[in-house]
Length: 222
Image (cartoon, rainbow, N blue to C red; front, side, top):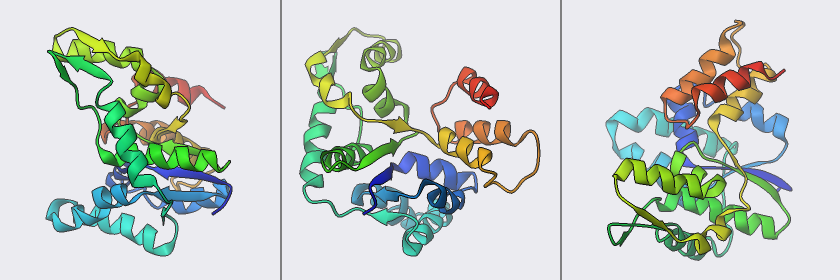
């Protein structure tokens, strides 16, 4: 494996696939000069299960094509399943509402964190590409996640702050950052001054957790 990697969650791959721009990953990988990895749990979410559902079969085939070509690589790191379960148990017991633990996340995105942890211990630089809001907030701002859950559930939330340390060292990006880089590197072959705006809004509408303000700020970056 190369000494740096992007680990892709299903949410990011789905966002790119549903916008018809999944093919930018091949060119982005050449620029990045590192590995693009998925876990077995993510493969189940974006390829195996969708291939059995008519509505999602085309997107699944597009992702499978990148895996078959070697653009995406299936990680076989030892110990990933056990570590996924450990982190999953921690995540899903970090917040309590109405006397019960709140199930926040599933194995797919947490397997990406488990792989990131394993690679970091091997001194392999890595980031995790996750569009889904909850996992990103758990990593970047768990206190705000507690506040968000209170508003959403209309109940008092108890945060188990001792659980938060396990999440603080992960680095997260989104499809928004990927399409921004693709635009700056001229990898999207549409010559139009509105392209970046269109790309950012497209991924937002397909599930990328990005605010209107963040979109405006990214458009100002030179």
